[in-house]
Image 1: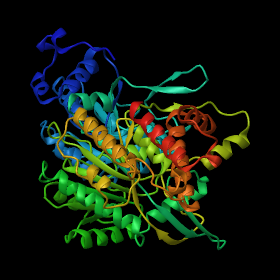
Image 2: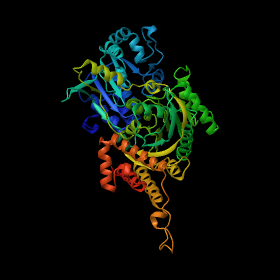
Image 3: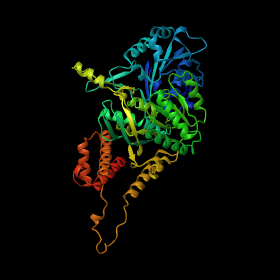
Length: 588
């Protein structure tokens, strides 16, 4: 968006112009935009790690200095974030009470405001309305999309803060797509009848990456063969990432994440190797494993202790010392933390540089929140590495990291039954739907699948510990974004060149020597099936990325490489198509 520059406004416009020196360029531009015209509501959409907290507090300090407000209320998703906001506010000379409880009624006069959670507001909205009416109040909504978590929460937030003098809403992740309107957010009518949220200032990941505000994120995807037994007693074996039914994808995914299987062990080993490499340039770099539940978190922690010889920090949502543990970890040099959801959003641990997405939560919102924990840059050249299962929906999220999404309210359907069905099928921010029906995990192997970066795919499927995998795990931890892309392309080219070199053939067959066709070793049915699965998996990923039907992609590959349809294609023809679709991913 186009905003006036600071140069176009005189210094005497701002009372706290001293704050501008503390802000980044985008924050200063957004600061000017906020004060350009009088407005009661302002929505800032800035990528995780960009510095939304500092921006909001600088606005609050200016409004206090102008006496436009006399009090501040910060609303956060979690208890830990209340304390984080209070600590940050002190740098701007603002005292916030993070320990305020509804039972207190009036807040202490020692503070300029309070920090509360959305749940706290929903529990007693009239109390917070009375507090807001009593003083000229600025309300800062941290991750405003949480006000749409439930209709009752949205109603409570609206009731509590409708009288506020000013409201500043912040978000750094894709807005949810449902029918719950988010309070104090402006929606514009679309041609299809839907309503789309409108932000007053947007600072996306691509802009932040160009400015050196955030780190480039390298996604390392791991596949493998999964075997499980269903509740009906059927034994199923499938490769993670190949075309499967929705239920089979969920079951294969859950099998991969089982702490007793090989997949988790191999991925944690690879992630720890990557952390060691990153620490060559970032000595205090740390890793975070995001687990699905408490039981898995403890099991992953035990595996990490066996791999590293060090006890990782474990943070669970029901742990009363969780905030203290997070704070201590942030300032320590410990290698690893394992958490369930406590570190999924907003928590500021800038030294986190390596992550393992070991949960089956499959929403774009949660994935973006999780990745956001690793992107905060302290200096130029730092990179982030996130290890993920080769599940199409996650690979799609990784490929679309730079996409900027708005909240869309779809018009109600004429058929109530269809609305109920869509609601029942809507993916929720919980792994429960992926755990039912229950399964018995039999086996979970692992192999390195590919690297995703900046919308491209690099690497070829290979066993853990192979030279090809080490090529990517050994990428330097300090690289500019352009250097990351260059090195990935270089390693991809080297690997394809190595794999394309076959055994040397004699220049001239001697007497009685077999014909070249006879000399070629036969391809087993299993090997041919594995190649078909690999190609189908790549076609599925390309379908998710481009929207092209699978049949169209297969036909385009046949046109480019020649040969019959896939069931009749030879191993060499399938390999050519695999190389071709990977080349498409690099070029596009």
